[in-house]
Structures are given as C-alpha cells and as structure tokens.
Length: 136
Image (cartoon, rainbow, N blue to C red; front, side, top):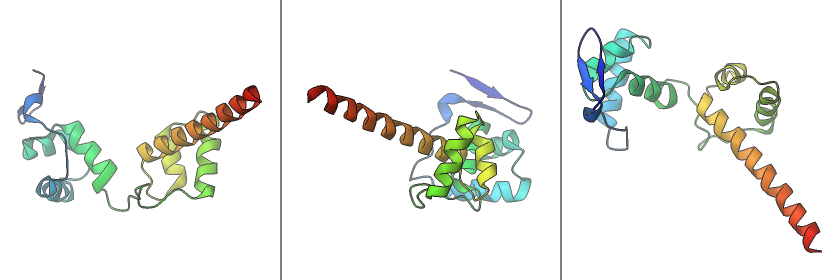
C-alpha cells in the first residue's frame, strides 16, 4: 500500500480509483474546486476530492476537463498540424512544447499518440512494400 501524504490529509493508493464514465459527479466537483482554488493546488484539491491523488486530479484536468481542449477523437489532426508535429519531433521537441506551439487546445498526450500512430502507419507501409518486393 502506497500512501500519499501532504499537509492536509493522507490518501492511500487503495482508496484512489481510475476516472471512468461513472464519475460525472467527480468531474463536476473537480471543475468546481479548480474554479475556486486554481489549477496549481493539486495536493489541496486532491485532499478535498478524498478519492483521488494530486496526480490523478491534475491529469484529469489537463487531459479532459480544462476549457478549450480539443480531443483528437472528435477533432482529427489537420495535415498542417501533423506536419508541425512531425517537424517538431524531428527536432527533438517535447510533447508539451509542441502542444504550446500548436496553441489550439491539443493535449500533449494526443500529440504523442498522433505522432506514434503516424510513425507506425509509415512503418507498416514500408514493411508491406518490402514484403511485396521480396515475394515477387
């Protein structure tokens, strides 16, 4: 059992659970707490949530609840966005920096997934070409 301790409370990892579709009330509570205390006091907010640790609260906020977020599943990346992502990754830029560069509410996780998906797709295409040539 891992304990997360801070100035307000101690939350055991066993008491935390993953966010899922049944957590609409928790999402609403998290949004209210962030509106009241700001998006920086994650340990304090987690203590008020009681069932989440600070990291879970921050990640839920940054990836799902923060106003202005565009989810890749609902809004696919445009060719221009994909080009910026590929060029930035070739330069070795971090996902968060690329998200700021795009400046349109894309999350760093969505950018990472888009990049990895595109690379995987390219790799599969090249493997298919090699297999085609070898089988001829």
